[in-house]
Amino acid sequence: GIQVEQSPPDLILQEGANSTLRCNFSDSVNNLQWFHQNPWGQLINLFYIPSGTKQNGRLSATTVATERYSLLYISSSQTTDSGVYFCAVEEGSGGSNYKLTFGKGTLLTVNP
Amino acid sequence: DAMVIQNPRYQVTQFGKPVTLSCSQTLNHNVMYWYQQKSSQAPKLLFHYYDKDFNNEADTPDNFQSRRPNTSFCFLDIRSPGLGDAAMYLCATSRDPRGREQPQHFGDGTRLSIL
Image (cartoon, rainbow over all chains, first blue to last red; front, side, top):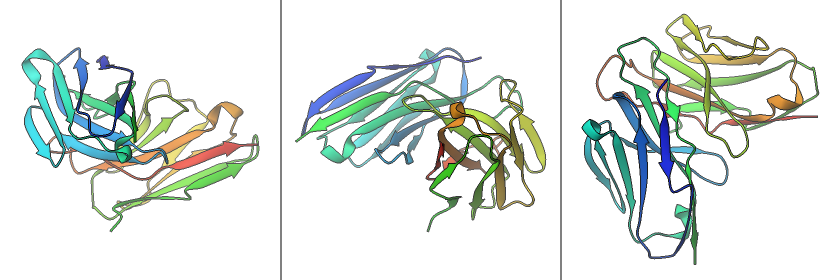
């Protein structure tokens, strides 16, 4: 099956700093999503981005499908950005298994 | 406004006592998924329904079953919960994954504890 690797595994920032999270995947994908899991366990969908670039406020994401990676940018970080950021992909093999395979996540801590 | 609703938010059961978790959706999506997430790990797919078609992951234990009586509801049944089944259980939906722009939408999860 497809492999998904996220880096860094842990990141500690001061409030106001910028950061870039990376997701590498081993095969072509039909679907790529970035999620933020907050301390209460809620999984919030940030971006659906199998290719291209999207922006939503202080967050933006870019996926370069041909090179099999995606980047999540967080600017002017806030303490509420703390949590785990997951990248998840659906393999583009043309099969009927529509599951998302998650990376291990990046644990982000933003200190005041 | 909630589109994928999971009940209850927290569930406590005894070792070996059957438990059912529920998920409902207001999105009229074709596909419903159940994921298991253990502490400090990534979510892992247990199974999914594409309409009425059930698709089990190869490594999902037999102890886990699912029912989808209609489009809106899907249940996760754990027949004889063991201590290793304590986890967050996440339900998700998607419209039709064969189409374009079909993200999965997640509920808030049910955190299951086993006594």
